[in-house]
Image 1 (cartoon, rainbow over the protein chains, first blue to last red):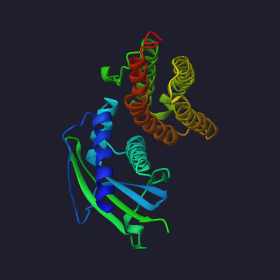
Image 2: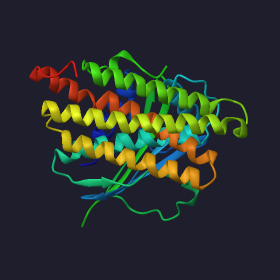
Image 3: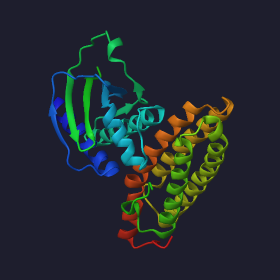
Length: 152
Length: 141
């Protein structure tokens, strides 16, 4: 199940990056730890057959490059405009994952993107599906962390 | 410019409206993101926002009419996507005005609109063009 979800998230990320940003050369590998220095973390809550959250970690440089590609404008800081644009991308990727999962009869919904503060996350919940990966593109890398449990 | 040739559906009327919609969003973004003070930008931002919102409504309506005309099977689903976005646009625009033209709110709106529009036209709308070509219907709009 974890492998399947990992592949699904990866495929959706590749599809969205290629379609929206013309970034075709994308590689990935699992990671044990995420260095969150200089990153903006976005959490998308998941409800339904799977419950938990997916966290997208966008380094500032990657966020700026992504929004530059989309807007064709000069962007030099991660401000409300940039955060909102990359949050919507996280939302779109997650939505595409749900569509793929529904074809396998796994029914889930997602919650709106929210800023995620790793320092405040002291709950340390247990997840039966817990994967973390780094996705590298010409615009920079992002981290993707999936934390889900099947609904009881 | 935001527009790319790959966004074309091969349906003349829809493509023309998409080009115009992208042009208006582009103007809105350039006005919003210019380096002058907010007080100097706000009047122009409000003008382009109203102008763009009006065009979003007109385009969604026309595109839905076209889908209906050609018997597009995903019409209801597509209409709901439009309705959800339109509700967001109307809600944020109202909140922005109610809060006395809050810049943070409109910057957030612009970021989401940019990503949403590109994805919607590059992904969901392309399916309309594929269907129209497969069925050989109404590519002149």
